[in-house]
Length: 136
Image (cartoon, rainbow, N blue to C red; front, side, top):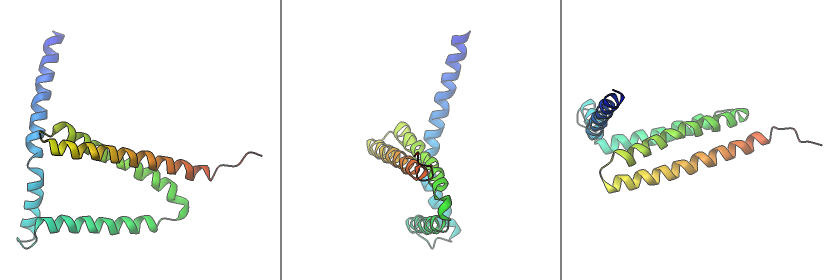
């Protein structure tokens, strides 16, 4: 009985993985098509994505520099925690992809995101150490 339920669960899981693979193939094209449709065909999808990237740089810059110095440590901690989303995306790229190039880029993203998270928490730990009272 338990083996039958396990086999059924594995079959359902395989179907779900195949559905995610099939759906993930259409996401970049769909995003480009939406941008193309909204703009009336006047904006190239590459330019649209580049504009979003540049705007996100400016928003990030102004958000970080407008925070008071006392809140930089919590901001660093939260930013490092959010960076773990990159690890999830990299794992998906490595696990789902059938292409060797995508697997390679996913692996590189996984390594770089891990270094970023580790280094960020190390810097946060040093920042918190500045607020500790020194033993006499």
